[in-house]
Image 1 (tube, rainbow, N blue to C red):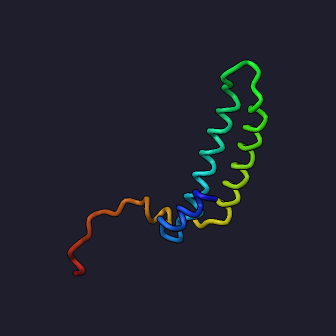
Image 2 (spheres, rainbow, N blue to C red):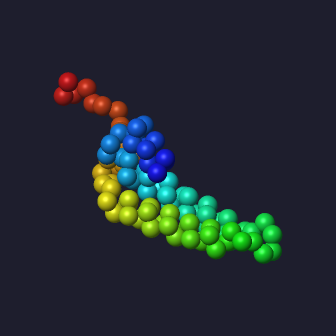
Image 3 (cartoon, one colour):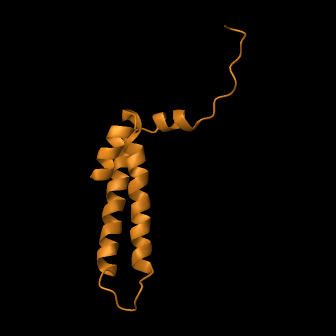
Length: 87
């Protein structure tokens, strides 16, 4: 929730959900990596890490479904040099 609050305060409104979706999916990948690569042979946090990975994935997919992709495309698309013909 803290990350979402920071995104709302810092980013333009149309890109909050897509950025939060990417953040949640990256957090899910990190939690899955933590579950796959245990530091000891028998760890107690592996099950909880898989649960967190699933929760982050669900939240990330939900944010991606609810978010619009057009503002992200506008930010990422390179704009060429403007022509002076119509000025």
